[in-house]
Image (cartoon, rainbow, N blue to C red; front, side, top):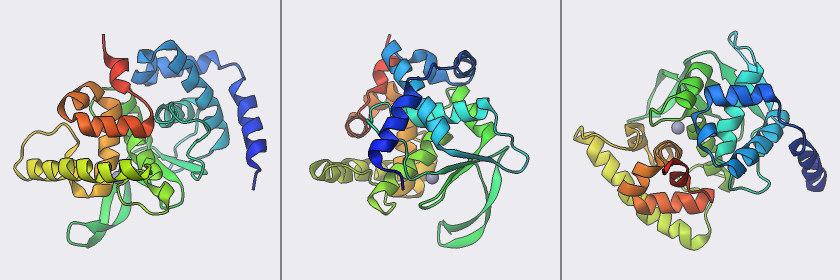
Length: 253
Ligand SMILES: [Zn+2]
C-alpha cells in the first residue's frame, strides 16, 4: 500500500513531464472534446492523462494491442470526468481491459431476471477493472452521437465509491436528497417516454434501472451539455455540482 504523500509526490512528478507531441496529435485526431476545451482545462487534462496512463495497468485481450493511441484516448475520456477533481484518478480501478469489439457476457439482471449471454460494449466489474470495446470507444470519442462508452463505465465506478452501486453518486447529504428527488423524477419521465416510443435526449438504455440512469445522464452531461442544460436544468445543475464542471460553457459560442 502506497502512502498517500508518496503517491502525491509521484503524481506531481508525472504531471510536470513534458506532454508528448505525438500524444497531442492522437488527442486532436481522436478526442472531439480536446480541441473544444479552453486552454487551461486542456493543459490540466494533459497533466491528468500523464498520471492516469502511467498508473493504470493496461491489458489488451482477444488480439487487442495496447498502443499509445489506445491508452491516450481512453485516459483522455476518463480524465475529462476528473477535470474538477483534485487528486483522484479512479483510484480503486487498477486495470483497464481492452478488447477489439463487442464481447459476450453473462447477464443476470435483464428485465425479469433472465440469465443469458448478451453482447456488450463495456463493463464495469464490481470493485475491479473496467472492460472496453476499442472500436466503440473510438467511435464515441470522435463523433458526436450522444453516447460515450468510457464516460458510462467510469460513471459506474464513481457510483461504486460509497461501497455499493445504486445510481446515486457520492454527494453531500442535502444534495443527495435533492438528487433522489430530481433524478427520480427524470428517471420516471425517461421510462414513460421509452414506453411510449417518444424520442429522448438521454439514451433509452437509462430506463433500464437507476444505476444505468446515472451512467447515461453522465454521458449526456459531457456529450450534449447545452441541450441537457436547456431541457433538464435541475439534473444538469446537480451533475455540474457533482463533477465540479460546466461543460455547456465549452460548447457555447
Ligand atoms: Zn451501465
